[in-house]
Length: 451
Ligand SMILES: [Zn+2]
Image (cartoon, rainbow, N blue to C red; front, side, top):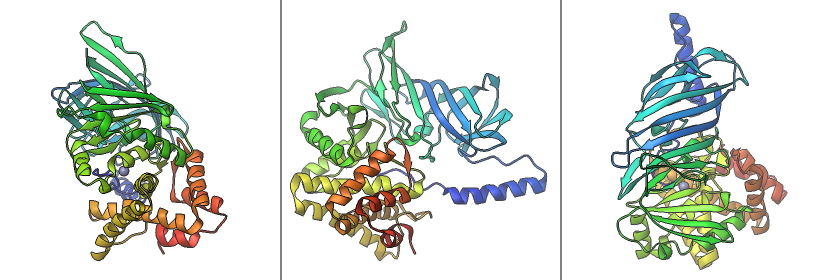
């Protein structure tokens, strides 16, 4: 991803401190326990959403089921990311529950506390117009990044990966893209069609997405999987030409990951503007960004960067935003590696020079942080200079230090070992040390953890 606000949430450590203060204040005042932060005390195992999106207005209505498991004792409330939807008819294990909703949190107050390991199933209806994350295009809509605006989920808990079953009720003649695999569609009596999408593994909530509309479609079945190109613009784009590098790029990234394309399927949806966003199984590719790249081919990045996230970010995911550099640094580095493979050494060096200049620019303002810094970034460009650019430069530095054979073996080992799971900087260090048979702690202290 490029333009979104990931990582600006309050870090977990601060959340705990704030929670402690709130609880202390509440108990001293003899008040009810303070509202807990989204995700505290439980983890989600699965979401199931049956949604009827209005393609004209971007409003949504439907039902949602969330299967949760307690991760601590005496969990009296289940709190999720706030959104602008109306939540009604909420039950937990078929008993009605109170729900309070604000822009900060949606809180379900349980009739009986959960203990660690207890499971519970929430069910409720949702309707309303999402405040963010749903965009109209010609003949349809797409969602991007802010999944917890059109469903109830945990936007800032990338480590709480869960399954998603998404049923979309769409007018006859509408194409859809969702998370994971598509099941058979069912024609309903009211000129609607039920589209069923099922994740084949758990994903972080911010990767839940769908698109629905009358899109021009091209698809190719290759030895690497099914590659689909959709046009959500009005410009009648030459999809085969725009996405011509896709098969070779999939082969290159799968080789570097040591793993096939997840689900052996990848969809790229061309949309207007500068959109650049990966989801589980598909990416949004902004037409304006591709136009810019056509005029300046050496600066191309979007197709390779977003595709790289199918492995690094989506399959192997940072446990918290503190280690977001693992998602973005690796994706940014893989653009340089792809250019080295497809265009030669000079192209690799040039891409790293771009990263170096971005980092230099922010350093000139007096700002520089280790990659796993947990603080709040002063700006999006400062965050990107560290987590994207410095992350990529660190990978290039590691590669040079331990050599190609150990570096790529480490990346493959890291990807395979943690596929479907979550990672921290320490996991990445372990993989690099194992493959290189070297103690890399001084290098990681300097670049990643800080003095
Ligand atoms: Zn990215």
